[in-house]
Length: 124
Image 1 (cartoon, rainbow, N blue to C red):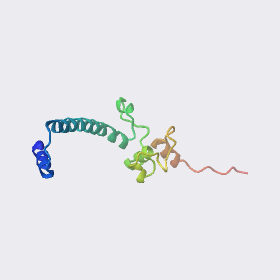
Image 2 (tube, rainbow, N blue to C red; image 1 turned 60 degrees about the vertical axis):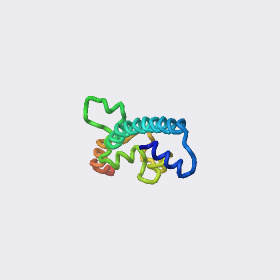
Image 3 (cartoon, rainbow, N blue to C red; image 1 turned 30 degrees about the vertical axis):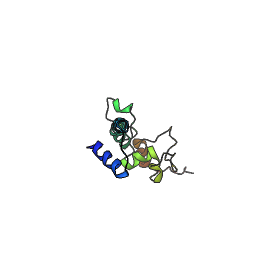
Image 4 (cartoon, helix red, strand yellow; image 1 turned 60 degrees about the horizontal axis):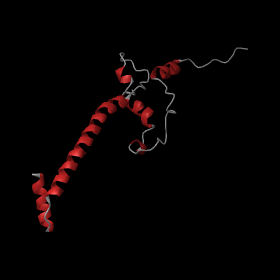
């Protein structure tokens, strides 16, 4: 069916497609499909990891406890991509990063810090 379409397009233009053109098209189509399926496979692995704020190394840990869980999907993605914005879909550095990329605040540490009582002033 695909070759018939291209023969129809060639006939519309008043040109005849050669066998080499048709074979080249299908070879390139197969190559594109192979690359696309590889990228889809990578996405199916890495999107859930980004949503849970894990790396591929942490994926194989025996425990389900994640010390870098930021408290929600949006917070996890913010640690990876920076504050939400147009730069999430662009291949650039985050304009508003939430961390330096080396030190990450864990959810447990944030909860513990928030639950601490404010420091008292020294008594005279």
